[in-house]
Amino acid sequence: MHLTPEEEKIFNGERGATYQKAMEILTALGDIYGADRLVPIRSAQIAGVSYKTIGDAGLEWISGLEGKVVVPSILNPAGMDRECWQEMGIDRDFADKQEEIIRAYESLGVRTECTCTPYHIFDTLAGIGDHLAWSESSAVSYANSVIGARTNREGGPSAISAALLGKTANFGFHLDENRVPTVLTRVKGKLRDSDYGALGYIAGEMVGDRVPYFRLDSIPSKDELKYLGAAMAASGAVALYHVEDVTPEAGKYSDFVPDEIITIGEKEVKDVYSSGEPDLIAFGCPHSSVPELERLALLLDGKSVKRETWICTSRAVKENNPGLVRRIEKSGAKVFCDTCMVVSPASERFSCMMVNSGKAHKYVPNLCGVRSIMAKTEECVEAAVRE
Ligand code: F3S
Image 1: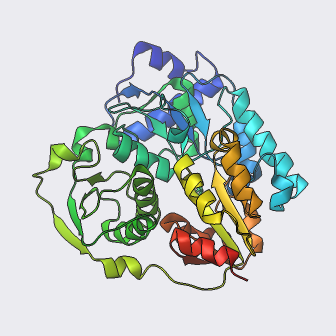
Image 2 (image 1 turned 90 degrees about the vertical axis):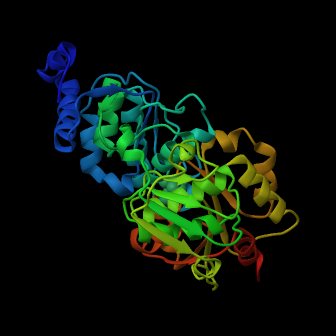
C-alpha cells in the first residue's frame, strides 16, 4: 500500500508509539485486503466499549493509548445506562470499570455518546459518498445503505486507529466495484414496522455477506430500513443493501444482472414471529428514534406494565424528549440509554425476552443466554401490560 511521506513518518514512529501502532493496524489491514492507499474519513464510530465485551484486557489496551482523534468520533453502546445503572441491576465493580473505559476514550477526544444510531443525533457525521470508519454492524449497514456513505465494518482497534489518523484503508465498501448488488431479493406482500426486522432475519441467512438488491411491494421508512439492515447484519454479514426506488444508490443498479434471485413471501416473514410469556420486553435495537418513542408513548398511554419493560435509546434522544419519556415511564416502562438489551449484562438475569427486532432476536440467545421471542411492536406492548 502506498504511504505518503507524512504517513511514512508516522509509520516509523516519529509521532510516538500510539500513532505508530494506529498506522501499523491500518496498513496491515490495507495490505491484507489489497488497499492502494489511505483515504480521509469524515467520522468514526468506535465499538469495543461495553466492559461485558472487552473486559480488563480491552480496558488496559485503551488506557495505554495517547493522543487525540482528528475527526468527530462517537462510541458504541456501553454495558449500562451511565446514570440509571443501579436501576438496571448492574453492580458497582462493573459500573466502575465501565466508566474507566469511557473516560479512557474521552481522554483521546472521543465523544461519550454511546449509541448505535449516531445518525439520529448528528447529521454532520456522514453524507452521501463520505468515507467513514464505523464499527457497529447496524450503523455500518445504515451508513452504507440508507445514507450512501462508505464504510467497512471496523473492529474497535481499527476504528480508534482511523479516528486518531483521520484516515482508513481504501478497500471493501470504499470502492465502487464492491457496492454493486449481486442478489435480487423479491419480497411479496405489504410489510410494516417489525416485519422489516423479520425480513432481515430471514434474508441475512440467505444472502450471507453479499450485497442484496430488494424489490419490495411496500415503501419502508427510515426506521424500517434500520431494522432490516440491523437484522441482516446479525443473521448474515450484510453491510450494504439497496432497495429499489428507496435507497440513494439503488438507481445506479436498476438493470444489474443478479447471480441469484431469491423470493421471500409474507408467510416466511410471519413465521419468524411467535408468542409466549416473557419476563422482559425490550424495545430499541437499534436504539429508538423519536418517532418510535412517540409510537410507544401512544401505545402505553393510560396503561401500566406488569412485566419489566425496557426501551433503549441514545442519551440525546432521551434528554431532548422529556415529555415523551415521562409519558412512557408513567406506564412503569423504563427508558435506558447508553446501552442495550444485548451488550448489557443486566438482561442476563431474565429467562425469556420479547423483542420487536430481528437483530436482537438473533443475538439474545447466544450473547445473553436468554430465550427470545420476536413479536410485532403492538404485541410486545400487549405482552408488557398483560396480567
Ligand atoms: Fe444497537 Fe445493541 Fe441492537 S448496539 S443494534 S441496540 S444489539
